[in-house]
Length: 301
Image (cartoon, rainbow, N blue to C red):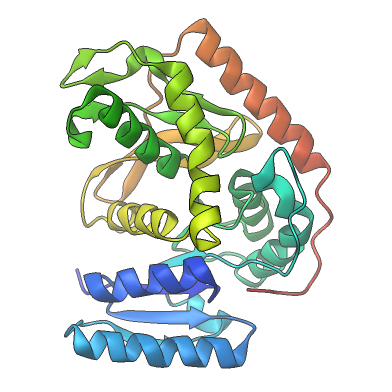
């Protein structure tokens, strides 16, 4: 397989961090960066070109436009409109009204796109659904629950004092307040484990605030989740990622098993309580989607 072509929409904190990670990794043969802010995207591309040369990366970085995205094997949607998030609860949903029109407008411009779309823009479960419905694209995945799952396994490993790679477990549902920890199927070294649920949940809930208070925005974790998912979606490695995908009439986080780029759901067996919480998350997302503003024709990043 020739080196894939990847497009990133958005030159903000996540877009910048992801682009740098892709260049250092040398994953894309060509990386197109798209943004409505010309000075920002030109500056970012120049900086990334310096990075590519310094690290002897094979990636060619260019300023792109929406037409360039159609020639990409994968497109990452990391746009964010200008808004002030005043939400005290459901913080990740705070940008729904602001981001939905921009995501919808981009989706319509990419209607019928054949490749893989990874949506990072929050609230990711709602934005992935908006993009999929407006674009008609068949391979739309939301990045969110895989970051939650990574954090869960890392925090549980710290509690159990074991290496993170020895922990197996999923966080599914909404990337937000209604995330569902699959406690019943969590294992350490293949063996069931007593999860200190209250402590781990508290740590999971506090971690985003810890990061925001320290550096302003979460950026490295989402970039890592995107890179890991891209490798699987492009068929470069096989494995499982928890991604926002259709669940009935909504999008929410479900483990997806990738083999040679093809993805199939692999939801673990859930207890009655876990299933109830998953369905409650779906109901809440269904209601939230119904209250999104209708898409407009503008695009932002």
